[in-house]
Image 1 (cartoon, rainbow, N blue to C red):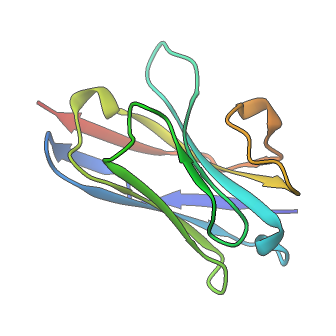
Image 2 (image 1 turned 90 degrees about the horizontal axis):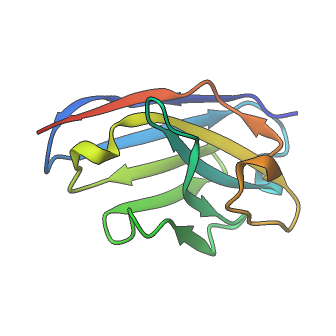
Image 3 (image 1 turned 45 degrees about the vertical axis):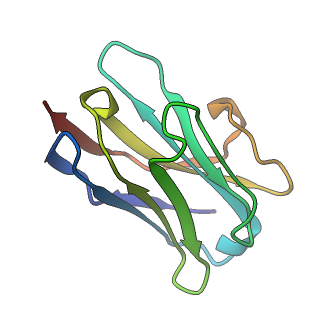
Length: 124
């Protein structure tokens, strides 16, 4: 079982950058594909990015492609989301999620474990 804890959120001006981190506590972190999702107030939770167990492949939502980079360090049991050129519409609670096996899904219902989220607010 994986427990996930996100950190790194905060308030940033438009055009700025943030790096989110997700720490996993299970013993089999490298068996999981890892995703980032976000949920803005009044909206559903949506896919942001996902990375495979070995660090590849990586897929992104069209809205963040070219601005966000997902990465992982299996030795440290960490997954990261580098967010650049932030926009006010990126404001949301960001969640880290884990899915076991070969699936690399974009649907939140496919994921096995979730963190509690970290707030990102981008001011204009």
